[in-house]
Image (cartoon, rainbow, N blue to C red; front, top):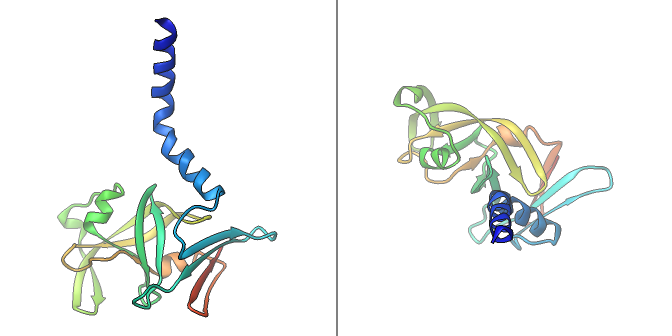
Length: 167
């Protein structure tokens, strides 16, 4: 009976780490979306490739503070921009008074909140303390991967319907 209790306690101790271990193992085996790929070159560069989707956009499979978030790559956005519901999903909680910074959007001026994303991962690319803005859900439906992320990379370029990010 004691053996079963010890095994049970060991399993309970390992359970919280299992998703991260499985995710890293899937990356090692080459799992993931077929429209994206990442690699680490002999130079130590971390590369992530994104194929254009059916609507002509580039959508990155990102992990923000460990949570999966699809982000539309937008070089016209100065910052990574999140809808409030996505910010809350990744652990960023704001008050009404935080929404005091004007932002120009296609639909006019809205007010957003400034914040930092503790960790952002796209394939093998990893960034810390990424500047971001949060807008109310009514003002933004899709998270944007803007220049506050792209400027942290060594380079990014597009050719043949593929966007290549290099860290």
